[in-house]
Length: 178
Image 1 (cartoon, rainbow, N blue to C red):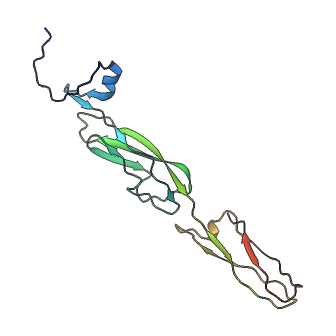
Image 2: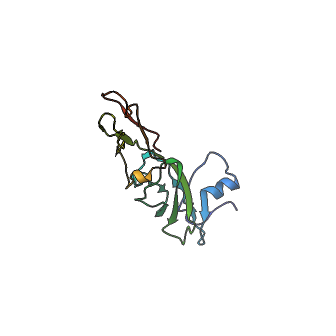
Image 3: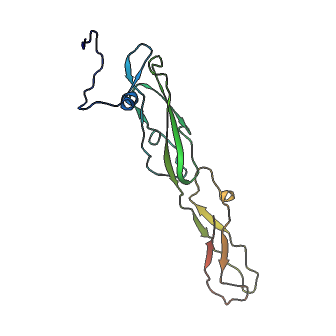
């Protein structure tokens, strides 16, 4: 007997026979015998951000094919260090765990670009024949509470002027800050 007596609540039509593996990846059978889609997450690598930008819903924007909740690591509001291919991950938990109790995990990569820091040598003057004064600098561009103490290497500040240079104007150069 090739007949079926019952109710069909879901149906897909294919132009070929599906393998057992294809069937199992498309549907998961709940305890009640109902075929339900497995939870799947869609989430692409987000656009690069600049250092100092807190991650938000613009980066943490995964979607799923069924209702449920998303838990992200790191969470919204986190400020990541500058660097390439930083890992963002999500755990998706279906709302109706009686039908699909399986949490789904996925990760994407986020590039956090460094921001430009401007180091400016301050103008200084001295009296002819006197020792050169200290050559201080000013900074522009620190973000996220960073300060000069955050630098791995302080800038080197130099001038071509010396205590025996003729009276005149000499450039002061700052370089090498990391």
